[in-house]
Length: 275
Ligand code: SF4
Image 1 (cartoon, rainbow, N blue to C red):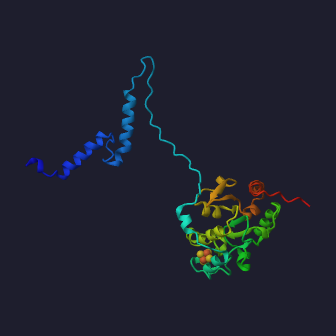
Image 2: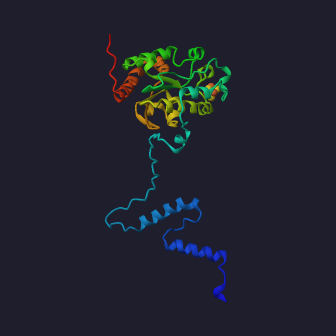
Image 3: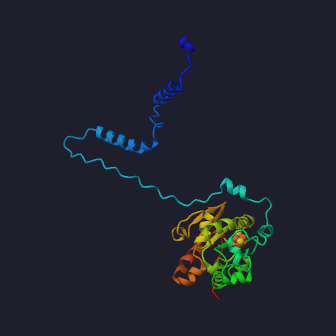
């Protein structure tokens, strides 16, 4: 009758544990909180077990914490990115869907939504942070002092302003030109993603940290990654300083010009000849 006896849960568990031991899987099934300590103890025991040469002084085993690797920013087309795409989308349709948007608090003090402007088939798109005072009044991106500097930068690249497309991460002016909040960026940026997907440029230049961080999904400081190429949904993307920053720090213009020269090389552009 013994052979017909059903194993108790404890017996079944013990059999499984023996099986895992046979497979050399160790004691992974025990308290994981102690595993790090146990592994360190095991390493020390192994080190102690190595016989030291008689003539040499044995140095103590010093546990050195592993240095976490610095991971590069890698923006790749994820499954979610692909699902985000709107079949047969156009800039007009995106603008229509945005409507008289009240999806975030930035609508409260805006005058005009600043959707974006320029060539809908542009090879180069500039993405800024959000509209300022002049943009809010006119409903157009980059028309204030920083906008004039951007126009000069575009022309120095051998292009005209109407050759490129210019837009922002948020479409309404943040009060007092403050930085847009994380939730405002999250609410508005899907319209930016649709604009970029529709235009499908050869290169995207992010002007300032907000745009770069929104598209690359990073919180890194722009000074760490500006001037480097990244992949954004199969399009080359580079971040550089915002023209408003250049107005305050003209010395940074040479860095921006170096960045733009890389963009020009990618697009096969020649710098404008000085007149
Ligand atoms: S910032 Fe964007 S999401 Fe917020 S109200 Fe304006 S258009 Fe709508």
